[in-house]
Length: 294
Image (tube, rainbow, N blue to C red; front, side):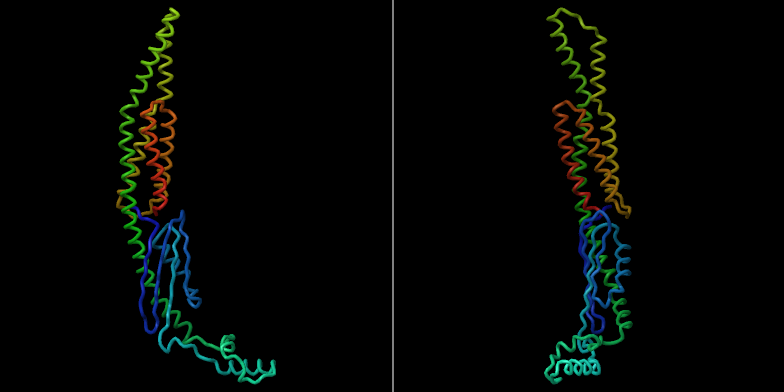
């Protein structure tokens, strides 16, 4: 079973006078890349939040955003009156102006004037206890969406694999005919040319020429390997095992294309060339789609 790397999940709650919201988004990436966005006072939680992400997904660019909104009187910062008074006296004295003429908004922005509400350690612990369950829930929603996208992705890939399988069966049917047709054409051409010159060709010469041609156009091994890769690809797509498959599928798609290119280089027949073009078109589509798989 495969999952897409594209998804979204969120969760929110109110704990006391604080509203918490967690959003997580993911897009394609060859590896796992995480971006954590939290309020500055919660920056120390970033490492453990990253570990929670890594425990749930293995590939993709994942962005986790946490917002906290404190409500009611508890959200108000405490004014350090002594610090404010000292700032005001120093600034007024330096400028030679009355204290009452100073801009209060600028004064309260000075370091130490506004003190965060409550004890920082207790607020951090309360935030941790509220945020961790929300992250788990948001990741569950993200994985559910990635799983749904994976089902659609699987259906599309199987459709392309079925088309390749049909064209492969047709190639296996007509491949032996290529040598027979070449033998017939070669005999007719040589008989016409040599008949005019009244020269008799040795049968061994004709057999040797046909054998060389048969060797150059023999695609039995490539067809067998292509068929085996198709079966392996389908087995992975229909497996119920919970593990990342994107990189394995990417490798298999490259092997499919390699065998198709070899067959194309050995196929002088027009119908075979047309079938190979269709096969390579589906393989290119598969290569694009597996880039979305985790």
